[in-house]
Length: 84
Image (cartoon, rainbow, N blue to C red; front, side):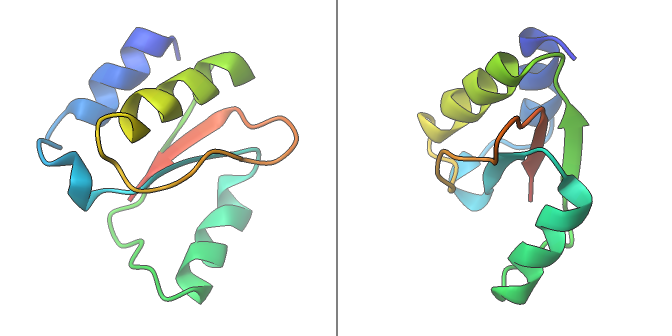
């Protein structure tokens, strides 16, 4: 997905960003259980595939700057953006 498409998709229905956690990864099927193991509630997990790593990083930063929980990182070549 393009950067604008990701921002639009993530924004949909999420008005209070402080309630959500955002992250990027190269493997969402591995990453979600890691969050679960730390006691985080991933019931409302959604992930999207960005067209490039740069897009994933930009989208993550966009939402972190607006109050979503999380931190930068994401593995070697993250192209998935996730929110829960």
